[in-house]
Image (cartoon, rainbow, N blue to C red; front, side):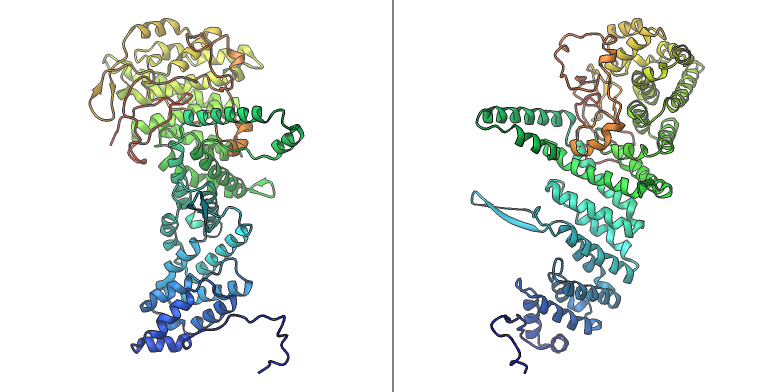
Length: 610
């Protein structure tokens, strides 16, 4: 015993007291039917005050007899795996890592248990706060060690992957099961999504599935936070802030403090659901930027691969979801990195629109994306816009030709000609936003190009697209084309206004005879971006509606003089009058999720097509 050399006063005893025999002896006794030490062992392992030295000793013993740890000892292994290792000393971390690698190598039956243990640390630990006598449990947002703890988790996961090549096959279901409920705090969701995306950096085979999982959860948030609700929450927040400032005014001279505080304050979206979505959008867009760039230069191959994965998720989840306001901007942002990406996205949408094998509802959605993307993306040059308009108008004219040559009387029927009307509206919408850029520089050539599109034939055809397009799109398009004497629409618009719109079919079945100001189920997916934090990346790429420049074009309607000053979109206030069932396409989420009553995207009624 080396007691003499020990500094008794300054060296406190280390808690290494344990009861029962060694792990190997305990397992042998348990096999012989004596479970007393076995139960004692589990109890000691679950001690909340267990010290680092104890953890190291236990793990070393378990490693020495890992071949005996068959499935019969499942509960014991679960207790060992729950030992506190994240955030402990480097010695504990290394010993735990060694135990994990030995365990998954010798006993693959515990692979999923090891994966679940690591993934359980992908969110901040839970803390209980007492407020008003009520215990409230939430994430520990103030934990400064989170980055280090998360890095340790990924180190463990990479180690498991090295020793168990089948990890990627078993990991994805675990990541899905552990995804926090979307009503959890922004911090919890943000951390989990960050860690999911980090997994894709060293297990790239999972990236498409991980992106699909994340986007699916974000879409649920997106469709449950309508534009009108977000705007209302922002207005209420501004009013509350003004009241608070007026209350404090005169008490102190706070100008200097407030100005300093405002300069470093992070913009926060007022709507609680939108604020959670904003946090996730910021994480996802940061990931997109990091993957696509290396030393501030675009990495072409990695960008192409990410584009293909995101496009697959777009086709599967985003395109069929009517009413999403923000998630689609992930592709918008990615396409801004290089013109070739934007052109590839436009080409993809064009193929969906013109494909007869695609469901009509998806073809209409593709047309909405096509028109909205051309109208709103600043990074798309006029030459590309003109090329897309040429394709659209060529297809529209061929469609009119086919109707004229069919020998049947063509009529205005959305259920039969939905993609045609959606394509027409995409053309009108694009011209509203981009006509000025087309005419700049050389007015004569610009007007000659607009004349070459033969828009008059489109407007005058028997299918009568002006009758079903959104009224604000129709009226603005008519004003612009009249100003430049390209086509005169007002005679047709007045005639349409005198006729009753056809029956609007309800997705619930049967017909509902009602007037609908949005019979085409118009959807403008790149309407203004309302999320504050992630919106900082979108703002410089986004073409706003320049209302002042064209205010002489817009007819003044009764009741619209008092419109909100800050609104970007000329579609503001356009709402549908029909009370149809608001639904989603068959491959999307719940049939009762509602689309927003928003700027340019009124409530709609989709016909279900199976």
